[in-house]
Amino acid sequence: MKVSAIIPAAGSGERFGEEKQFKLLSGRPLFFHTLKLFLQSDYIDEIIVAVPSANVGSTHRDVLSMSAGKPVKVVAGGTRRQDSVKNGIDVSASDSTLVCIHDAARPFVTEDLIQRSISACEFADGAVVGIPSKDTVKFSENGLVKETLDREKIWLAQTPQCFHKNKLLQALYYAETKNLTGTDESALMEAMGFSIKLVEGDSNNFKITTKDDWIRADIVAVRQAQGTVL
Ligand code: C5P
Image (tube, rainbow, N blue to C red; front, side):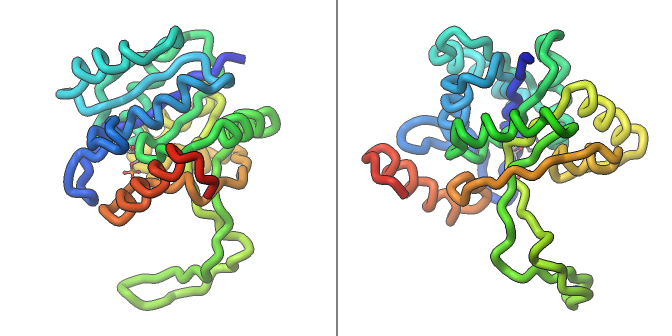
């Protein structure tokens, strides 16, 4: 089974205030840290990075210097995250059967998470890394609590999210025809009724969304460089 990793890195950084994927973390652009883990992974055959169209050329030059024999393609992302992922799938190897999508903004993914999310696809249409909620979760409307959800059933989704490529393509096509936008690709698969397995993730695999997340990432990166186990 051949696996294509897709790293969406084409966000505009609206909530962060700048394009954080190119901001330096421990001296390297954020997306480099994420890409490096996929380059080193034994479970990934090729990598496709989606970046804003203005950055395709420079990113391509940068990744050439680090690709270490594994094929890496750089494509222009789209307006929505799912469009960036679709652009990535469109250039993936025709013989890859699984796609493993991972946010560029989660630079602390581990080989174990990559491996477990890929393996979980053996018995399901896809698999999503997530963390069981520790907090009680309220469903709200207009600032008022409508309902308290059963905490035992709540998971906070992360990436990697891995799917059988042909099924994800069906889900993306369905989303296009129904005008659906998902905050992740799993949501589009779920809308089609596909089975998605949950794989327990890890709190260090957080997504850098705000400046506070960046400060946390800086600390984790320094501790990793020092070899301090968190
Ligand atoms: O917006 P969200 O937090 O879900 O973004 C997750 C990842 O998707 C980020 O790495 C971001 O760069 C990427 N993204 C993308 N194309 C978009 C929007 C987001 O590749 N149009």
